[in-house]
Image (cartoon, rainbow, N blue to C red; front, side, top):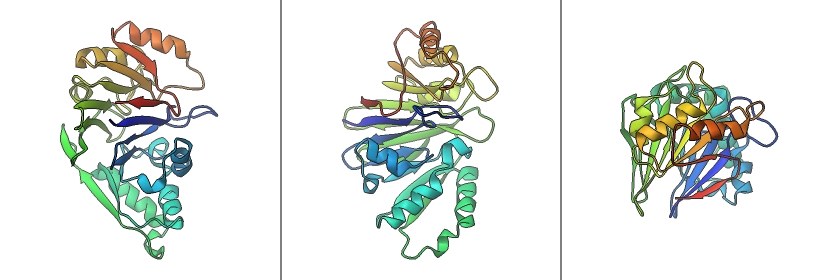
Length: 251
């Protein structure tokens, strides 16, 4: 059984109870972080995970509230003596910018730095990004302000599936990623360009025939959180919940 752990649930502006949206999926061998903000080492420790457990990092897009923690994560792991390789996945433009960002910190001169393998993914629907004996992960481009990808994480042990919309308007690509998913994490920033409302998230979950919907990347400062659940429940008849910081979901 894998575990989905929410490390942050807020949209672009966090508050004291809601960090920016990012999460980790942990199985026996693999520990996969999706997006990297703030101090991910501290967040991992707060949920009982060691930074040495981290095997893979998916960067969904190059907005500060999704990638700003990358330099700190890499530096912290280096200073703490990490030796094993870290695999980092993203669209071509995302990885290009991530490497340029790290170059500003002259990371190529950090002595005895652990290996980092960047994997550039094409902006094509249902790209197979990772395939091993625990997970099969697919990515698809979604409809945001810059190149962005959503994910479908298939857990091979029990044939369960987690889907993540990331930042997007309602998208057929997300419906495909979430087809029959046991858990759909869908953003609920609001019905604006590049984003979705809770009601729209519910409609995507309904069309995808997902089993449960967890709203994430919502306005933690100003939104009526109870109303978000009501709005999503009007368009989706399955389980609806708010993703909250440090929430753990067995999948």
